[in-house]
Length: 164
Image (tube, rainbow, N blue to C red):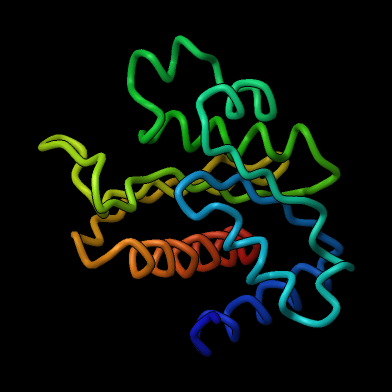
């Protein structure tokens, strides 16, 4: 299901987390749990992976991760501030030391001129470290392709945060 390069990255991430005694959580919107599924496809993931939050609706982002509803109303759920709050909320509402969050527009509909299909925000939070964020413009390459690119981007950003 996942490309080999994505599985290899997930394996390296899990190994590095295990070596450092770190546990991971995920908070996913447009990827719908694919990052968690990718991590869990690696044998031994249970020693590192704590839990995954699939927060597709704004209500779930608010209820499960503590993202303020007024923030989503002001800037939209697909935004840097919301991705940062999702990552922070995943750490705070789990037994994890670090988390990655993804929110974006996978298409084929839902895009606007300001927020086109293929726009994805990824943030990673780690206890006692600054939250890091990256913005991706994958373009209108297809829903599943956008989601798979977002999974790789999330794993890569999280791995970078582990190595800091």
